[in-house]
Length: 258
Length: 347
Image (tube, rainbow over all chains, first blue to last red; front, side, top):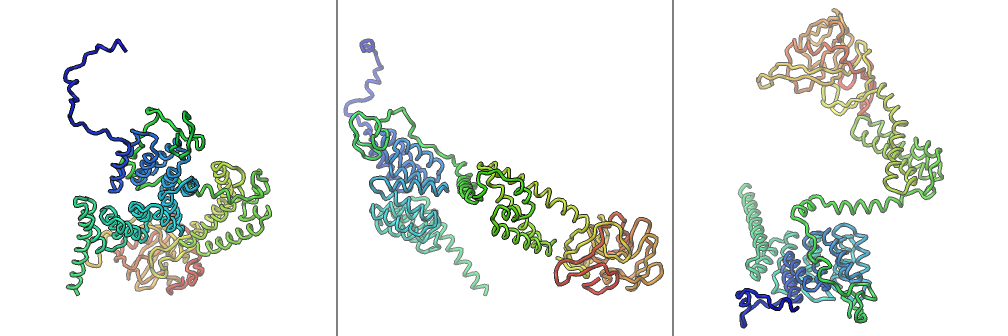
């Protein structure tokens, strides 16, 4: 407009962006999604949730961003919030199969198995297939103590060959206190991606739950080799070593007392 | 334009997907993309009290309950005949044509009630009687459930029914029975009474010499010495069971295991004469009974003679009633009214 043509600004402000000066590249929603995925693969769900939100700020029609948010809320054990958020996402994308599955997972964690099954049925009826839908189906089976859960998890692994799928399945099995099943999946994830530290950590959790102290220590050492500064792995290893030392001293004391 | 939800190809310019109804365009300020978060405190609280899981369990149970409704009476108001028959478990069911169900309820109630009455005074007896009452309540619930469809109305109807039946059927006989007979469980072994024995007594203060009675000793502090020689104050109180030796005005002489009342050998003995001191002599004043408290615990220290005398004089108001029967255990079941006899296990 002509009335604003003659506005004067400070000199400094004009020199803010000098030609040739390096400015931070503008990130797109794809970059944010990649960042979120990276953090998710490291088990940093809080950070991943923030990056999914950033991606959605760039593009609110990004289904993956909504889905990722709900999945991260579930991983962070904020089930009522995850259920609420999945409902909101489903208002925007009513027939989205993965979002239906995510809502089913949140409902399952909340204990509403019947509603969760309805959601999962709806998700599987939608067009296309995804590993996540079958993973949620398997979780529902596991929560309902039904045997075909293994087939659902196998189907999920068939659909996507990503190592994250067996890792997350292992975490689901651990959540429902099936460390044996979880261990099988975690081993599979470690075979698929031995250079990734997160499957080793999950495997160590399974082995600790199973009482396999030596194997757990080995997994934790591998995990720390790949990611030297990982605090949880270091703490777990220290606990394992102190537990071993305590049992050894107990055994020695018993030997001398005899 | 492709729908992000169902991948349906819509015509350009359309704002809502023609297939699934998803929005195809969003204005930036339309909604927030930051998800709601739980505070660490809330998460900790949820870990301790997973209310959502309890709510889910409650919902699933509430969904299953309507399946238990009696189909014949569904949606109808109950006739008075059925309501009046609620006093007997299973009777309303039999009246409405569900004979098998009614018989089962009545049979179960009778079995549990009989078993509970036999073992009354014990934990098992309390459990059996409680279960019998629960069977009766379930019979009432079974009848009253179809009155309303709203769960709160149903709960209210059942509550009113249970209170009414309790007031009419259970309260009067329980009150009447408590006037006729009382139940006491023996806590410690002393003489012929074993810990766990259940005694039935007839409440009242009209008792005769030689009767075994339940009486109360008000708190008395007795200075004595322990087995190791230390000075100690022994507190005697509570309910005791023993035989009335003498009435008001009579003199008691207990010497070397022989009891004399008014100078004559008494035809009865205390329940556990071995625990008494060797020498004891006193006269029972007016308003008192003479009861030698021989059913002291086995590890009780020896009391000085003046303390024995104080403990042996029991005011009339502290007599609870006459013990008539040892009801439990069954192998030592028997009447206790016989005034003579000093052998262990009998009176």
